[in-house]
Length: 389
Figure 1 (tube, one colour):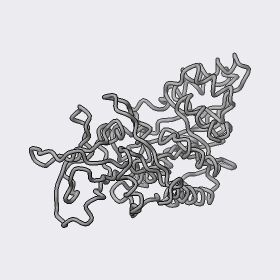
Figure 2 (figure 1 turned 180 degrees about the vertical axis):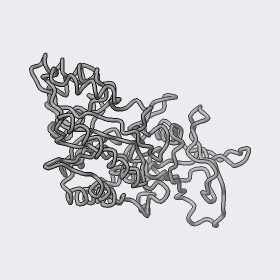
Figure 3 (figure 1 turned 90 degrees about the horizontal axis):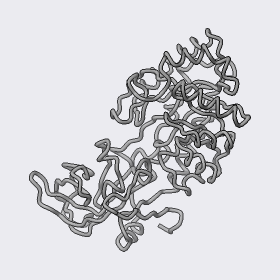
Figure 4 (figure 1 turned 90 degrees about the vertical axis):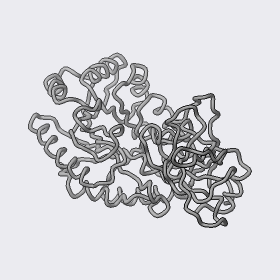
């Protein structure tokens, strides 16, 4: 439930506005730590989900590492308390400057995605007198039941070393004196709720690492990526994902070698449900099939529906005392793009100009993907622990 005091505050506040429930974040982190510590698993938070400094400080405070995909994310992680030895650096297109930044700060490891990248990292490490620790990111060719734009583990995706590149590395690794292999890295996609996907990943990893052992490569660590989904349909009822079920899946199906460590890179599952985007109704506009509810938030504030056709639960917080009628609307923003639509054919009840609209589960890939398209100003931010709601 949204507290009445918060709703009263939103009435006079400038919208669109991102609200972050810091208490829910703390509860989520506690459950995550409890579930992962049971098996001694190491967790790296994926900054790309939300790099808000206040949120990062809370996540680093409890001891999580960081998963970064740019040099700026590395710097942001360091600024907000993540120790360099817990930072991993992924991405298919690392620049020389980004690699040098990571080497200078002695991060834990690079997740390497091509043979050419490994060569470049080796050369730059040699020039700076350092030794770079790397994970070989392999593409397990696993089909994840998720949107095509957020699947990463299929053979045709751009991510990970192809088998031919892996073989080339194995043949030439003795010549790469400034590279030290820390382990293998995998990531099959995002917003995955079917544990069979992760179970199949385990089976693939078991086979792959046995193949590496036969070729003389000792695998000290397995980084299984992330991808655990959240419940966008019922965010209030399922505010915290079932971390225990997720980690149990890996514990039960992953065959570990002696002293082998397991790492994960979770983002969405940690921060998605803590965020709510509040907006106000500007107009009720007649449409061809349904009336349009035009709100002051747009795709510049929350891109996921336009980019992925993503679902977010939407609620009208202003009509609780009105007659209960089933009114079907399309909810759209003011940006001059037909894709600036948050939902179609949804029931909001009796909706009027000035009503407060809540768009839930926006803590991940919401504010961080915002833009100034149409020269729109950035949404403001409000935190639960800074006000007495």
